[in-house]
Image (cartoon, rainbow, N blue to C red):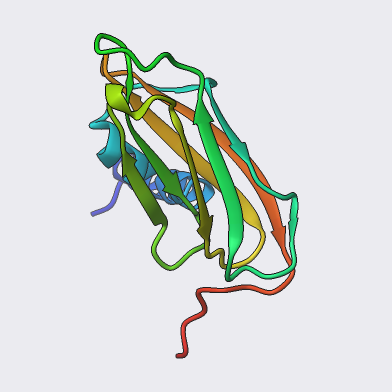
Length: 147
């Protein structure tokens, strides 16, 4: 026979599941970022993305990412990862760097499935992770599934 205590426990469970689902929908990259960082803290800053605010064509959007960090043997950028929350495959690219790269900077062209915020994550040699983002308005989307 159901009682008030069981009903309240059931309501709390449903509320917890819906809150978790809402958080997952609010941040579609959360699980991917957690995998990339191994659960380490992701700090905002030190990473800048230079891209046009308006892209006429999502098939080839120019993008330059730079990290404010020296590139010495003791202190350098290990990798720069680009993520796109609206693309069918959110991991756009991963660039592996090292102290001999000279500068912590990469330039590329990416495909974007509509207007969105592109995220760049830099992993440093000390094990820290830094991020930067840029909003891009795309008038003609790329990466569309044929069905």
